[in-house]
Length: 173
Image 1: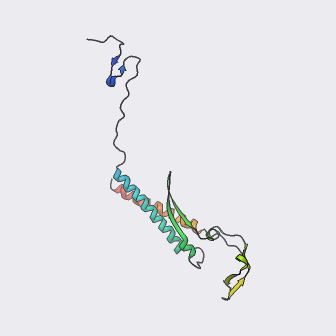
Image 2: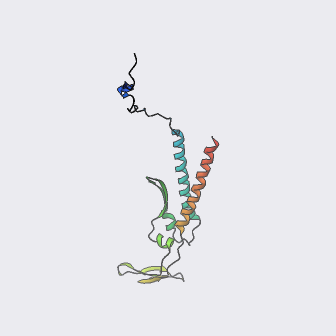
Image 3: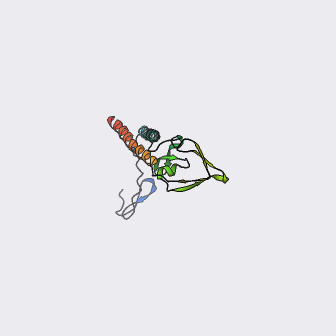
């Protein structure tokens, strides 16, 4: 038995195929995964480890190379790092929540400092004796950029760590 020319045929899945009719849809291929799930996990651990190492380095940078004369150690102690997850990836953030960190890091113009609630400011004078004043004129200070320097150093170390890890991975291929 032969079908007349141009007559539609019953194709797979009950679709009619023939001249002027669309072909039946092809089932989507199931390609193997491009990345081995274990390799993806190792890469994730490598990235987290490199970020942690860079964050610790930033804190060490602030502690060991302060561009200012530390007096109380408060700026050292309040300098922290954290890894922030974003939709586009992760960011290593170096922060310091001391009230005066911004003035030390970014500099300060000359300004007046007044005692609160009508009290007195108390501090050691140049001769080492205690001085009490209702207000003082702060001369200002240059920007020390200690957070900028720590962040720059951390990102340099992050690049080195990622290069080291990628070299180790490449050796296994």
